[in-house]
Image (cartoon, rainbow, N blue to C red; front, side, top):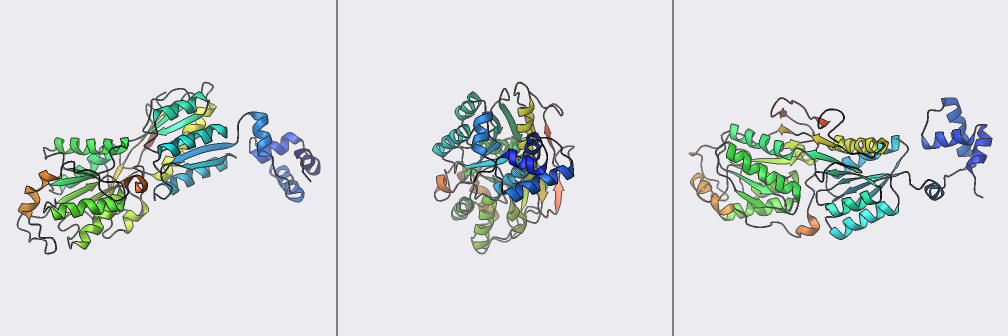
Length: 405
């Protein structure tokens, strides 16, 4: 037997409108009245007909969230914070995982449109502008990560990757490191390209040689492969900066297997501050920005756009900070003994670095295993070193509280 909202209202001795407000959390209802309604719902075993409501209103109670790789340690906290904010407003979550596949990205966009979601947060770096325009054409508000220009149905969250890379290089240079190699992410990802360009710019600002990069796959095996190549070519630097923490964790493993001490012989810096970063051996110095704040900001940006009469979007900035742990220390002196395991003498370290430029993609099964460039959260940090006036993570719309529209 199908129970209707009218029967719940009669049993609770309230109007149908009041029952709707209680169940949809659209208006404050006195606690006593709310209690009667919920008790009537329980006794009658009433369930809302979401399909009928969607047909009647022309839209659903869903917000969409699209991520690159649900297996990436970064995304669970983004998903959790976004879903928590949505549930608090009586909204549900429709989650899609692209796994870096263009076909799955297109299917995800189609699913959002077909389910008439109110809006969607696209927390992936490889999203193409064509799909963003398709969502907007169907009046689906979208919040995108480092993509697009804010406008009608479009908001943008920009992570200041460049600031984070400069913070890392400033730290390493302050410790006396002159030979620094960057293990970049896949150059098909715009965020990975931004980080690599920032690395080159930061070295140039300090007058250090640039273009000492290897392309990884944002996975641990890519970090391991890059370090093994350096060791094989007898061109190990004094410091390695990685495009994300999974790469850095792989680099730490390969260095340990080769008997190279971190940080006494080689310092290692990551990017994202995933939970595993503080548990690495040694705990990883890394660039941090809050995953939870990113999810909350994506939700708030969506809701602000949905409340706007003209669905006007804005741009928001997420800043970074360096979390200093024990994987970095002062650069080894030129008189330090050679590494017994890999035989990399200081003189060999310097002479072989030129051969590290653009050696191609590292790591097995890049397309299937690649992890996102979007990670981060602070965990058990030993110190936070700000760059510039900000001393803590700052998440704010550009141009003040209203954002740049």
